[in-house]
Length: 55
Image 1 (cartoon, one colour):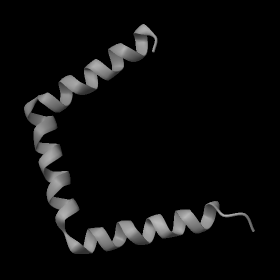
Image 2 (tube, helix red, strand yellow; image 1 turned 135 degrees about the vertical axis):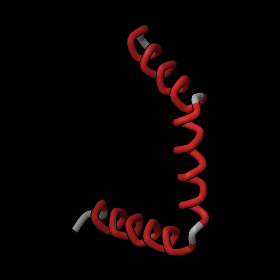
Image 3 (cartoon, helix red, strand yellow; image 1 turned 30 degrees about the horizontal axis):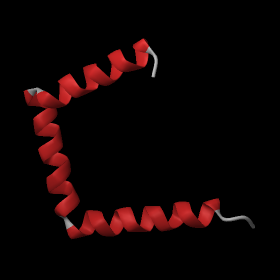
Image 4 (tube, helix red, strand yellow; image 1 turned 90 degrees about the vertical axis):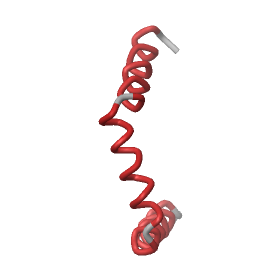
């Protein structure tokens, strides 16, 4: 990994350690627990898998 990429990753880590990043993480966890969102995600993944298959 080059130095520039390492800096970007460090900045991302710092963001998630901060208050705004923690709030965003909690919101994502809450959304992931919702059965409707799980179903939406599963449908999206199914569509993506079908799209990748050769015709």
